[in-house]
Length: 374
Ligand SMILES: Nc1ncnc2c1ncn2[C@@H]1O[C@H](COP(=O)(O)OP(=O)(O)OP(=O)(O)O)[C@@H](O)[C@H]1O
Ligand SMILES: [Mg+2]
Image (cartoon, rainbow, N blue to C red; front, side, top):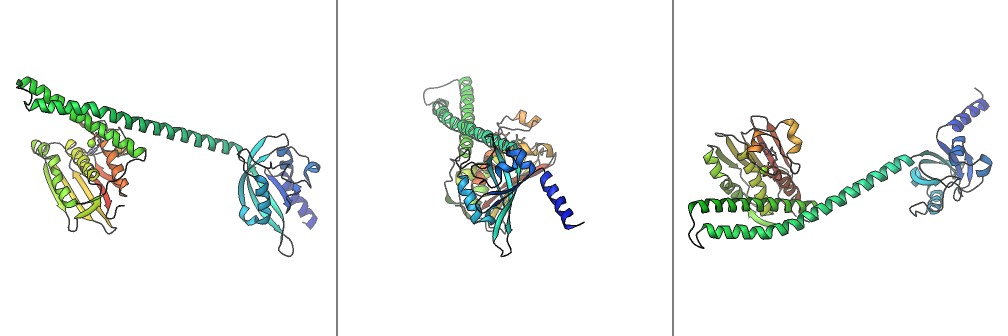
């Protein structure tokens, strides 16, 4: 093929390409404009050649106020910073479009940039879809924030009357305000128990909404983790004895004083143990182990020989208000807040929480606690 034939063939490719292809000199004046560009922007060749891109296919500022003239000036000075860029362009009829450009400097014999070859594709629809997604995400986030702050406010309002219910039923139970019949005592016990239960639910909701609103802060103090772990069985002792469940602890060397939020760590352990005892049938086993890992953290494991969690349900354990529908969860009502809250507490400390489980065999819940929090 002769040089001329080759030239014609290349020109044909460039002319017929389904992309905008143009060249401009260092002033931003158009020196080449392929057919696709002519159709796309609505300029005939003779209308655009020699004209500056600013004022033709580039508006001085885009719809968001970005200074595109400055951008074109900068492009001539620093072409290597504009190998690819996205910006808004404008057609002859005033319609705007987002174009993804790839730009290549064309050098003269002395190696100076003489022109810039720009190849562009219309990404308007993509941009619009992206904007819609961003808007939808922002709307969802703000709705979620509103929900969290509503919950936080409500929880405060709910706690105040509950304190009266719990406090006064406790007083009456102890015969402090006069003798009661056994039946009255029994019913007061229900009032008191239910009040306590409701309070702990409200506290969980309050905590969760605080975490979600980014307002939950750690109250760090130094405390003995070994002691806390050893004593934690107190939470479930009574139930364990009643159901013939054996408890064992194995706290390895070197677990001692840590700096963390004691209340939250305690709650995590309480939640894990209360699940373990809730989901383990009579005669089972529950264990706690703790050891230092090589990575400057403590690994705690709460294991049980209970009903286990099926792989298909594993995603629901840490999601709020979700409970795996089983004979057990129906039997032992809960709200499904314990695990998501625990995971969030651990993560606030910079740790991780996960579990391994086999249906019918049991579950191991793990969490890590960095030795240097805060
Ligand atoms: N040790 C476990 N063995 C089997 N299933 C478990 C265990 N721990 C949690 N699960 C499953 O994960 C679900 C979520 O646990 P989570 O502690 O968040 O909720 P809950 O115990 O049902 O309610 P709450 O803790 O709010 O009273 C449970 O309902 C249960 O289905
Ligand atoms: Mg629970």
